[in-house]
Every structure is written in C-alpha cells, then in structure tokens.
Image 1 (tube, rainbow, N blue to C red):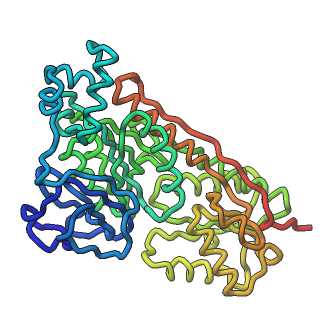
Image 2 (cartoon, rainbow, N blue to C red):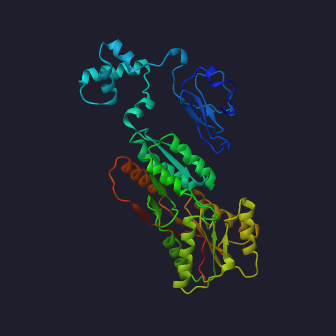
Image 3 (cartoon, rainbow, N blue to C red):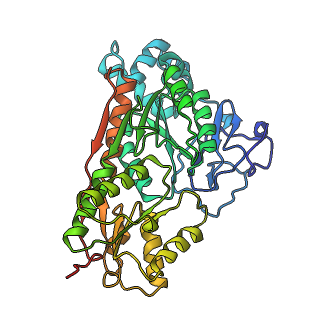
Length: 417
C-alpha cells in the first residue's frame, strides 16, 4: 500500500481516528487518495491538518484554526450502547432519539441528546450508510479548480446540499479525460449517492460517457453542469444558452459600428466553446458581417500560458487586425488584456474587448470590462436541487435546464463613427 508522503510512520502506529484536511491545488499524480485507518481516507492535498497528533509532519506552517476536538484512540469511541447503559434505557431508544425518529418522549429525548453531547458521541456514518444505502455524499467534478466560475458554482451547490445534510468531494480533472476517468472509477468504488460533473471531451472526441452511464446503472445519480458531451445527452443538466450569449454580444458590437470581429476560443473541443463559436458564426451571418477565419483563435492544442498569449499577440500585431475581439472565458479575457498591454494597444480606442464571465477584476481594471455574465451561483443551486430530486426519486423525466446570460456594459468597447 502507498501511504501519504507526509506520513512519517505506518498508519497503525498512529493514535488518531479523525482529521481535518483543507484542499488546495497540489494533487499527487499517482494516487490522489490514501487509506489511513479503518476505512478512513484522505485526499493527498498539499495541506493536511491533524488535532491532538504529535507524530505527524506538516508540509505547511499553517495550522487550522478550528479543527474540532476528536477522540483519541486510547479514549475509546463512545457508542450508543454506552449512552444506553448510563441512562438505563435500551440502545434502540437511544438510536431513535439521536436520529430524530418518533417513539421517544421529549424529556427523555433531550436527556439522551444532552448525555450524547457530554460524552462527545460521534455518529458512525459508515454504519448508518449501510442501513440507509445512502452515504449523503456527492462527487463534484470540476475541470479547472482555479477558475472563479467553478468556485462560484461550488458556493451555490454547497448552499443547497448542506441544508439537506449532504457534503461533496471535489475532484479537479484539469481538462484531462484520463484524470476524469480515474476520479469517476474512484467515486463508483466508494459509492457516492450522486455525481455532479462538467464532463470532458478531448480534441479527438474521446470522452467518459460509458463511465457516467455505468454510474447511473449502479444507482448513482448524475447531473451535468456548464457543459454536455452532446446536445442530445440523456443526462439531467443545467447549462446556459451559449449561442445566444455570443449572439447578443456581436449584436451590441454591430450597433456600435464594429464590423471586423475576432473571437478567441479557449478550447474548441469543449462543448460550451463549440456552442459559443456557433453563436458567433450565426450572428455574423444574420448581421451580414465578414467571418475571417484568421481572427478565430483556437487554444485547443495549447498547454502553456505563453502559447495562449502568443496566439493573440500574433493576431493583434498584424497590419490588418479586428476592431473588436470576444473572449470565451475569463482566462482568455486576461490573455487578450495582457497582449494589448504588451503591444501598447489602447483599450478601447485601438481595440475593443468583450469578456466572458464577470469576475471582480473586471471592475477593478481601467477601462472596466464589458463582459458576458453567467448566473453561476444559481447554476450551482439548480444542480444541487436536480441531484437531490434524483436521489429522492422525485423526478422520472430528464430535466435539461438552460439559463440566459446578461451582457454587462462597461468601458472596454468604443463606438465607431
């Protein structure tokens, strides 16, 4: 067995039962999760915190402010039987009182709960899941954990799941279908109740549709968000109208006199980016604008930030460049702004820019950035509602929800006389 690289002794030599971990972006490539003790596993992130544990080496100087007070091995974990014996009642009575089931009067219930708190009783989630066939855990697959889009999405999702007693495990796929495959298999093996995913497709059209269908066959509910594998996918989903989002941006540019437009695609193999390109083409056709393939930049084969930046620099430094360019996500917006700065192009006097995703920085730079705003937090809330409805068997039909975006007008687009 491979143990966590930060552990300095074999797991059985430790005297701990529980720990608190905080995630960051430093996932190990070989084995993202490691069995520690008695079925307890932890993600191998680059920050890992323990309470009451001396035989553990941290790789961070930070200490969790409030890790809780977990029982040590030599303290012996308090059980329902212990509470029942002290109070002179049956174990089933204690179980009903703690789980909130009927059959226990108010005074006795309060007495049992008070004793449980006093003794530091912690419910056995693993045992409970065996009885209910539910782990109250959702697997969340994000394609880029550094992207503010996914951070806002998680906020909305957590808002819904937490109030129903559900937690979620974050799996960062890094736009890598092999990594997505590894995470999906792990989630299937550990029996999560549901999977909320932004599914991937590589440049050759390969994807993990088979694994998503296998998850559903195993009784694990699946909801796609942000993107699909194909428009006719038979999975519940929450997305935005990507074509209309770009269409409205092109219409706005045309009204301000712009006719020579470019678009920078993050990666054309991603469903959402494909849809945004189709919206751009359709708008050029409807508004009788020239479609110049030389001004359609595709980052599908790029792996480094320098590649993305060079591609836009090449277009903007040419003798004949577009008067305005549209981005297809927040990262591309940044690359366009960096390129304009390096070339000393004044925005919007010499180049107009329409961004995608309304992050805080859009209002902090000069000029402020006109951008396409997605209702990301709402998407997270809807995804949470969809997955819980599926788990509760409240829905028998496939739900495909599409939300509208908003074009936020600021200062990065000029009017051409």
